[in-house]
Length: 229
Image (cartoon, rainbow, N blue to C red; front, top):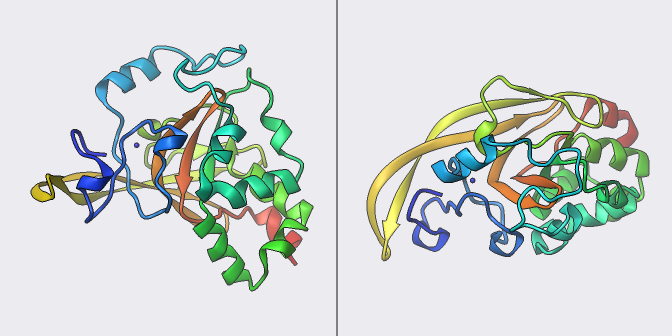
């Protein structure tokens, strides 16, 4: 379906870390980015309410696009959007009162899947049963900001099988005007699936009715393995 303070992706070529709470327009075209926790201001804002769950109002007025509109605006989600359409699931996100989290694989993540399974994109998009199970496995029925995901957490998905979370500290270099100014660390977060795992490479892309956590692999539930044959 979160960068170090005072640093932009362009300033950190060693380990690019775009700012927390990105919009679709700010999304990098690629999946070689890492994430850092949201700012204190954002954390206070998100902890203050329940993200307008159950009502038609957007989570944040500053992010009025729907989940599908947000994903469609990012070129690196074109395969994901095509998969949602092929599985007739795009309309499932029309309900603005239901706020969700989407773990969104990039195009490169789908290419890894196609190569690993020795299949074409066309073959996968034609397998509606497989797509439905896989895509629902990437959606949690609640809002889970990047900073709220903790080591050992279990996440219920719309597919029925749970996902897990694993965290580890990684270091990155801060840059100013193209020069390194110091080393900092942040949590790298891995989403643990039944048959595959994925790293969150961009956190907190907000939309009206959900938040997108961008991942570098397609997560496969056990139920989808027989459907892929």
